[in-house]
Each structure stands twice: as structure tokens, then as C-alpha cells.
Image (cartoon, rainbow, N blue to C red; front, top):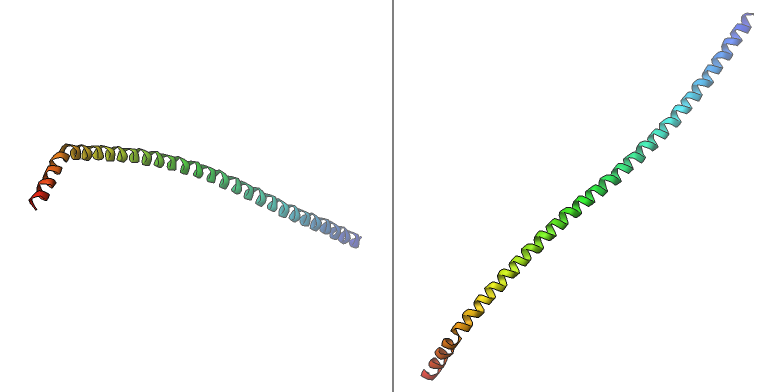
Length: 108
């Protein structure tokens, strides 16, 4: 009878060992699944972050472009005003300049 008890204990230990191996295998699989899920979540968050950064960059670029366009228009308008002022000064003093040149040429 002692052998049968020992045999029973050994069989029970073998079953327990098989159960532990099975649990270890299941835990390993769960770790892999968790790792895959975590990586998928990381990838998803990275993509969302890129999209947000891209949108923010586009907003900043568009704002800078609008500001530059406004400044460019202002500079062009100022340039036109200066050109118009110079042209009017030339027109106002043209006759006097011609008289001065003619007088200088005739004296020579």
C-alpha cells in the first residue's frame, strides 16, 4: 500500500507539474498578446501625435504666410507711394532742370 500512496503522490505531482507548465505557457502567450496590444497602442498614439503636430504646424505656417503677405503688401504700397512722390518731384522740377542744363551747355 505504501507504494500505491507514493505512486499516487507521484502521479499527483506529475499532474501538478503539467498544470504549472500549462500555466507558464498561457502566461507566456498572455505576455506576447499584451506586448502586441501595447505596441499597437503606442503606434496609434504616435500617429495621432503626428497628425496633431502636422495640423499645428500647418496653422503656424498659414499664420506666418498671412503675416508675410500682409507685410509684403504694406511694403509694396509704401514703395508705390515713395515712387509716386519721387515722380512728382521730378515732374515739378523737370523744366528747371532742363533750363539749368541748357544754360550750363550754352556757357561752355
